[in-house]
Image 1 (cartoon, one colour):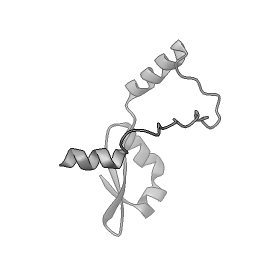
Image 2: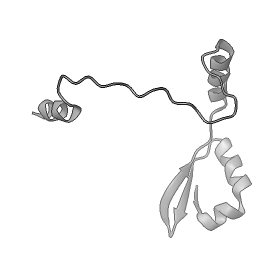
Image 3: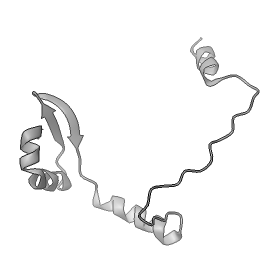
Length: 88
């Protein structure tokens, strides 16, 4: 289903219900696609619940706290050099 931005604003609930039911919606601006809306499969929620039950995943409603950046070693080739070598 294609839908213009203006129509999306007017019918958001209907469009989201269609996405939830498995339809892929392409949002258009001046007849050109600018975004795609897809529903989240119900089984995706099961995986998150399983991770939370095992303690592998927790969330207290705040923003995620990122770990410290990975330290890079001083020796060895850079990624760009490795890519260039790999291309031959």
